[in-house]
Length: 261
Image (tube, rainbow, N blue to C red; front, side, top):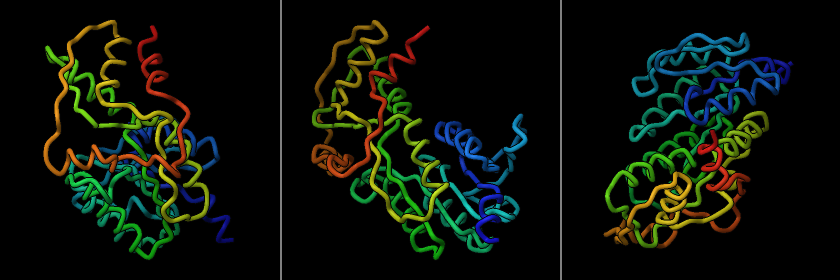
């Protein structure tokens, strides 16, 4: 009876309207699960199997109602800061609701990069792991979508900076979504292997690939990222070169799709 209840209960997806959530929610629906999407504004859905609820993770408001009857939570919501506090609020509400599986998406290097965003991600990871709720955490590389935002902004400059030694291994959000759907529908697995893209690039190469795909030309200027952050990136602390799961879609594939008519 418990297993049947878990399968028929809605899956709560925080951040279900974001870049990753828009890919994950249909996969969960295709698997026959009802999905409850949590966002700050809520909203309506054309799919009878998708319910939208409004709640504020940072303020901890509306979470008890959002979690009513939920046994599985997929926590995708995130921002430039405050992810640790938002996750602690979610964890407390999930404990009260008797949630049986909490799945979290984090970032490769959360335990190594000396930046506030990564420290907040690590704090969120710890909140999940120490919650007493069976859990699964996946660390992923930067999405192609974020990479595109970065190189688009740099391409607007007369000279495009090319930080030496700064490497990324961007992954397609659809590959991450597929893995997360699998993990959400499975049993709690703790910290699973990282998920990265199929190729490692210098940031300058990512910019050049973008410019070429757009038919643009810019001069590039080698620069050196100073301090602890620069040393961490040059040491590859943001990468998992061994033991990671690898996505299928490359940066070139992504750019070709975005450049298609």
